[in-house]
Picture 1 (tube, rainbow, N blue to C red):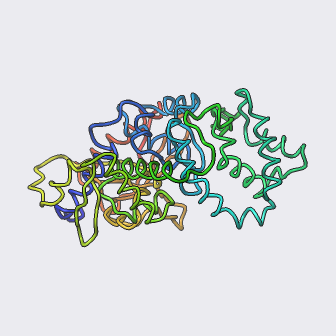
Picture 2 (cartoon, rainbow, N blue to C red):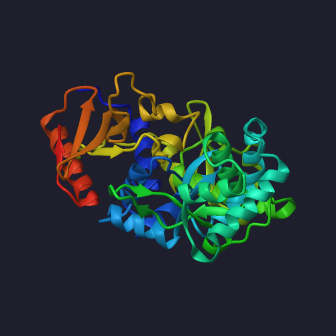
Picture 3 (tube, rainbow, N blue to C red):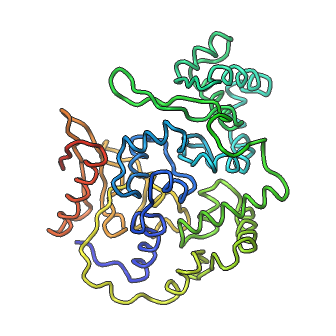
Length: 383
């Protein structure tokens, strides 16, 4: 068994687990979990459902899927150029902060794939017309619509036309549908029909500063202790923008956040937790171990860059032997890897601990596997 982590490391991990709602008080619903985290990395949809459900008592895969179908939770490219879950009330202003930088980041691929201003405007009109009036379309259906207009319907050209439409506030996720084989398929809908807040293009001036303040407040309130550099990498914004956001957040919500120095780095946390972080914690008692099976893109991992090492190991990583890549946490620290597969109506969990589990740790792992089965609505088996 691994040696016990230092009290300071335990303290930081436990605070992050609580603010991220992997520990009580949990979220009331999947949409509340997404609203708390502001944006949840979600390129692997099956595992991303679990990321949200873990933070909500009794939440199931079907429940998260229903919120996505209803449009309460939206899945789109935002912040960094990858998929995220975002609450419909937040996507408008977040896109106002992100769209310019996302388009700039894609500029080289736009040139390479022929997505210039004229063709993007044309494909945007075609895509908007295809999904208008609640006519949610799969990628294949949108590919057919573009193909009929002589525009790219496959390969990178097609992908970047779709992404350009998302970042421009034309497309957003629709209600998922199931294929003949039972797999969930992404659909697209009209942005303005699914998003509560307006998006009129990149935010400027005072509106942008207010949005930066909102982002800083929401990020550090849900992921503290974290640094400016952590927030910058997570949000895709510059460190200068994050500092402006912190200044605005301090003006709008005086006393909401506080800075604490740990390991010669400035960490920001909710003020209510700052004093505890400034002093070493007392003995942890004899609480039983807790195991969490989180996806490798969970916000407990991806919410940090400069201070990700507090996790206790490097993640995410791509195994060379096709082994598991998702993360086993033992009392908040990286302790192994896992993945799921399905055989005959049973979910098999391939879990590989970095060190042999004690009897108590094995019991905690079995409890988490059972919780995953409840989430999926099927029997689970550790292999």
